[in-house]
Each structure stands twice: as C-alpha cells, then as structure tokens.
Length: 491
Ligand code: CLF
Ligand code: SF4
Image (cartoon, rainbow, N blue to C red; front, top):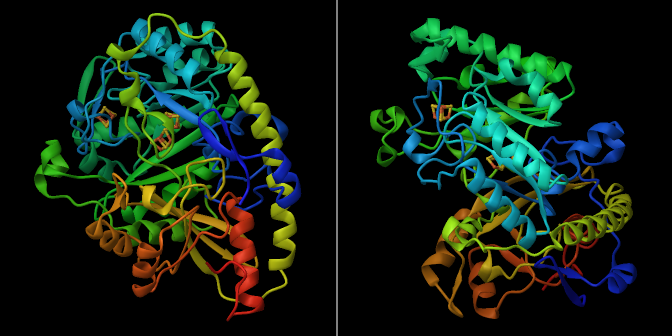
C-alpha cells in the first residue's frame, strides 16, 4: 500500500510511490462525457476539465457549491413544491438556506478559503436563476470580482433565458443547464399546469407550447455563442418516458454538450402534485433502459447526484451544514487562491500519471476476450480506491472489459461501520444495494464483514488500496481472465 499524504483534505498517495508503482490516467470512456483533452478541442477542454458535472473525470477531483438566492419562479412544475427546492436541478425534500446576494458572496468566500477543490459556483433553485435574474447577476458579479478563478454555472427552466443570453456571455458564464422534459406540448401540459410569460399566465397546452419554444430558442442561442449547455430531463414514467430518446436526439442535433436524464423523486410528504397524486418515479432499471436506448444520441451524464440547492463539496458529499450563515467566520484566510492553484497543479500532474498508467493497463486488457465484469468501488475522491468499506455511503459501479472501463452509476447505502462497530442490518442492506455486482474494491475491510459479504456471493478486495480506479479494474479484469482460479488481486 502506498504512503499517504493529505492535500486539501483529500488523502492521496505520495508522489514518490506513485512514480514507482503507478502512474495513471483516465482514458476510460465514462458517462458519455468525453474523457480527456484528446477527445475535444482545447477551448472546450479548458471549460470542462475542472467542472465536476460536465466532466466525469473532473468529479473525482473538484467540488461545487450552490447558493440559493433566486426564489422567484415563472412556471409551475408538477414535481415541485418550492418550499422543498427546485427539482429541476436539485433533490427535492430539503429546505435550503435562502440568501441575499451579499450573504451568498460571503459564504462563497468562506468556502473557497477552506475547500481548495472548489471550482464552480452554481445557482440551481429553488426558483429560476434566469427569471430572478437581478439576484443571480448581483451574486455572480460579487463573486467574480473577488474569486475570478471560480467558474459560474446556472440552471434554468429556460423560459426567461433568451432575454439574458448576451449578459451571460458578457459575464463569461460557460455552463448553463436547461431543464427540458419533452418536445411535445401535449405532454408538457401534463408536467406544467401554467407558465407566466410577458405579464400573463398561460395554462395547459398553450402554456407548455410557449415554454418549449423558449427552451429551444435558449438552447440555440447559447450554443451559437459557445456556452456549454447541459440539458436536464426529469424522467416521469407514463408521461414523458416514451419521448425521451427523441428528445435526446433533438438536443444533440442542436448542440447540447450533455444530457442528464434524472429520475423523478416523488413523495407525498413533499406536497407536490405528482407526490400527492401517486405519480411514481422510474426504477433504476427503467432509467437505465432509457439511457441505453439513447445510444449514440447526446452524451449522457450518469454521475449526477441530484444534489441540494445549497450543496457544498465534492459530488456525493454535502458539507453544506459546515457553512451555514451562523457558522461563517468574520474574516477568511488570505491564502485560499494560492491553495486552490496548488491543488489544480497537483491535479494536472495526477491526471497525467493516471492517463499513462491506464493506457498501459488497457493495452494488456485489450488482448483478452472475456465478458464484461461489474465492480463496485469505494472512493472518497481523487480517482482512487481510498475508502474503507465500512465508511462508504455510496458505491460507484463500473463495468470493465477489453474495451476499457465505463462508469455506470452510483448506488447509495448507509455506512456499515458506526462508532467503530459494524451494523448487521446495514450489511444486509448493502448486499441488497449491490445486487448484480459480484466484486467490491475498497481500501480496507475487516474479516467479519468480508466473510459475510462472501457468504452473500460478493467478493470484497482491499489489495489495491490507493490504486487508481481504472488501473485496478483493468488489472483485476486481466488477472481474472489470465488465470481464473488465482488472481493476484484476491484478498
Ligand atoms: Fe450545480 Fe448543476 Fe452547475 Fe453542477 S449540480 S448548477 S451543473 S454546479 Fe451536477 Fe448536482 Fe447533478 Fe446538477 S451533480 S444536480 S448536474
Ligand atoms: Fe419548481 Fe424549479 Fe419548476 Fe420553478 S422551475 S416550478 S422552482 S422545479
């Protein structure tokens, strides 16, 4: 196992050992997002390389934060109760801290000083960032003047977006999310009971037709000006699922950079129309089936965590409660920018290492002809297998074969280890969560839980602690298929 150093709160292997044991790099084609600089023009790579949502690779290294500053909205979605956040781009069911632009800027400064991984500030509800534009712009202006290295990102239903595209371009905002759920106004009427446009409320099909036309106008305008557009779609079984493949093709044809098909989260406790009328969300299998049908359409994002509208941290973690208004310091450390720059330099070196190691491992695996393997990975970030099994609250699911490594999805579970002891019920739940995944790679596991996992037919391996995810998966695949009975990576 490698010596460990800490950088920006992230445990990483020391560079000396990396040089000897593993250099690495993610050439894995994952999430549909292009993996690296070889796959896109330099200007686009410069925009996505540090954005955890626009690059699956970047989400191993970089953090985002959201501030909830723009509460007004100009439409009603049947999956939304604004009291519980904007389900267009965040997980409903939690109440974010609403901030003024001044409070938001103070919070961003405090987080940026403490979290060197921070690269993006997003405004993602509740409310619509383009409709409540004055507050969105005031927040971004304040942050940009003090933290020019932090990228700005916003999410909108699109209705008001065409009115602000020129300002968005002038403000150097490179990333905009539009939530587009359908191309068909008849379907739209089942999702949006009304829209408020040019001083008038429009209902049913008429309102939906206005909204959908403005969404396409916004998409075209943003793409024409070089802004990277991610399209979010909420998958609602029986309502818009049949048209999702066509929607995927259409947004690709119009130049969307990514398409994020998110499952509807519906709960009567949220008080939404869909929640109260029993509209269910898709199962994981239904979501996967729609994603698979999209095939060669727009690039699909699969690493979305449907995070909170006031989320802070790496995707999959939420440090928001550490940075509530009452906990913000009066003054912040002055070396934040320096720390972020040092962190980015480290990431650049790490990426180069990782790419080289993956290419080497890939060369061996490419010669093998065996069925794909599904493997769950425990990671805290940095693209490495660096989390104890008992601490994992999500498992990243990969598929590996001779063609390379593909990220499929993440699955959440409560951590097995609580206060130094294992929770038997939680292990049972983890086994259920890992249905169809026969191998787990983690940094460490005790003999007790390892045996119980083995009894359930799941092998847990901790022999590749601190390895890059891709090299460990490729080595495992090669190892198993060279010598099915042995396997140097067996625990
Ligand atoms: Fe936030 Fe959205 Fe920007 Fe990312 S989130 S505004 S693009 S910085 Fe990311 Fe969170 Fe998924 Fe959104 S994981 S919910 S896609
Ligand atoms: Fe709610 Fe967002 Fe839809 Fe507005 S756009 S109704 S805030 S989900």
